[in-house]
Image 1 (cartoon, protein in one colour):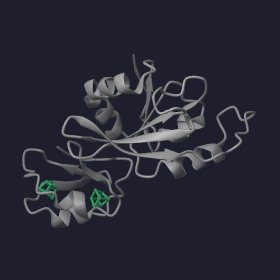
Image 2: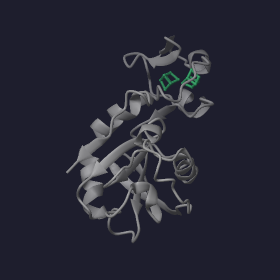
Image 3: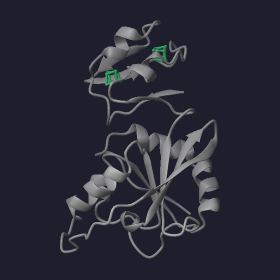
Image 4: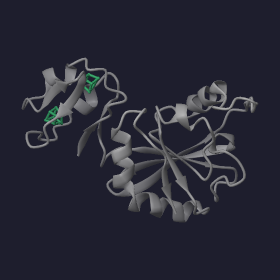
Length: 189
Ligand code: SF4
Ligand code: SF4
């Protein structure tokens, strides 16, 4: 299924020009695909300069915050995780791609709405990620949700959490399609 991220699309119109079946139009400055016309040719996904068009069955990148690679970080915000395990959602499965080490950044905890420097540091490690998964997501959620879908999972074991993510992928994709301002954190048990 071809989907456009409202958060990433800048309305440049390139996809409108290249679509062979005229399935794309620009509405309120954002590209919209007519699913009844789209033939899944993939031209728009490979040519969008913003990476805003995705075939969700092919690609949704998920990062899980952890210290030991077995358990989701339990004792602090996901932004304080030592590592992020990166998975690609593809054809109904989550496939492990890589482990990324988090940057060390001493957060200014006196900031009520989170330290923007911390959000920037974590975002630099999470380039290309669409969904961030943790047990606790701190006050920086307001900034982070502009780039990622924040998912809070109560189940500590990463192995079991992957199953929970797959079971709830439709809800996650719905959030992914919203703009950052409209997004909320998804809580999964
Ligand atoms: S090419 Fe990408 S950024 Fe440009 S209008 Fe289409 S989806 Fe939006
Ligand atoms: S996948 Fe192909 S047919 Fe579908 S909207 Fe994109 S360019 Fe058009």
